[in-house]
Length: 331
Image 1 (cartoon, rainbow, N blue to C red):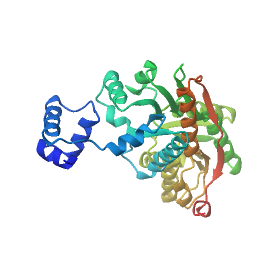
Image 2 (cartoon, rainbow, N blue to C red; image 1 turned 180 degrees about the vertical axis):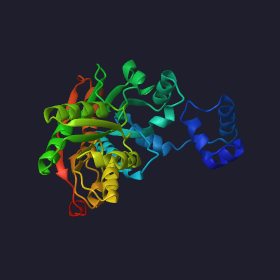
Image 3 (cartoon, helix red, strand yellow; image 1 turned 90 degrees about the vertical axis):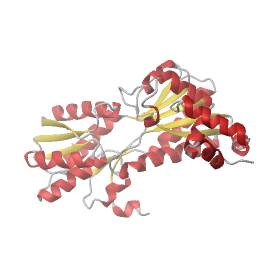
Image 4 (cartoon, rainbow, N blue to C red; image 1 turned 90 degrees about the horizontal axis):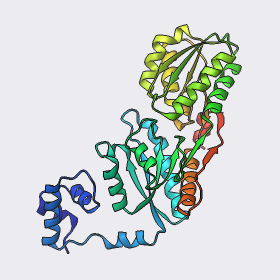
C-alpha cells in the first residue's frame, strides 16, 4: 500500500500539501489539488483508516482556535493552558478536538472557512481571545452555523455563549491593592494598555479610568499592545514622572519593572494574568491570577450544553489577586 510520502513525491508536492488536499483546506490551488488527486488514484493510496475509526467513536468534533504570537514565547503558557484544559475536558465528555489558529484563515472569507470546518465534521468552536474587529471570525459567529463558546470576548446569541472573568472588577481591585500597599503619595498614574482591539483591554481601560477618578489621580494612558518591549520603552520615557504604574498584562508589567530597575528608581507596579514568569522577576508585583485551564474546561462544558440543545449564556468565573513568588511556582 502506498504511503502519503510516496503520494507527495509522485505529485511533486510537500507531504503537508497532500494532507491539506485530503482535509479539504480552502487555500490550495485547483491545479495542485488535481495533481494530488491523480497521484492518489494512480498509487491507490488509502488515508489512515485507524484515525478515522477513532474519531467515529466520539460523539462530536470541536475546534479550538488560538492566536499565535510573534513576540516573546512566554505568552505560550496561556495557549498551552487553553489546550490542556480543552483536550482533557473534551475527552471526558466524548468530544474530539481539532486545534486551529486565527492566522490559518486570514485570507479566506466566511463561506470558505465554513466549508472547511464542515469538511472536518466540526460542529462546535471555542474561540480564544477574539478581537472586537476580528474578521472573518466575528462573521462566522454571527452566522450561527456552528455552536460557539468565546473565551474573554463577550459575544452572545442563540448559538453562542461566552466565558470570562469580571475584567472591570479585577482591574480595579488589583490597582486598589497596589496603591494601598505603598505609602505613596500617588498623584500621577501611568496605565499601559493591551491592544485596543481586545475586548478585555476595553473593559480594563474603563476600570482604570474609574479608579483614577475615585482616587483623584492624574491618568496617562499608553498603548503597550500586550508587548513586554513596548512597556519597557514606555516606562523608560514616562516612569520617572509618574508615581504608580498599572499594566494590563503581566508581560508588560515585567517590561515596566525591568525598566524601573535599570533606571534605579522605585514605583509600585501591578500586572494582570498570573503567568508563571512573574515569579522569576525578582521584584514581587500584584497581579490578577486567571485560571486559563479552568476557562477552557468551562468552555468545553458550555459547548457540550449548546450541542445538546440547551440555551446559550454568559459564564463569569472567579479571579484572585496574588503576588507570585519563586517558591510558589516550583512547588
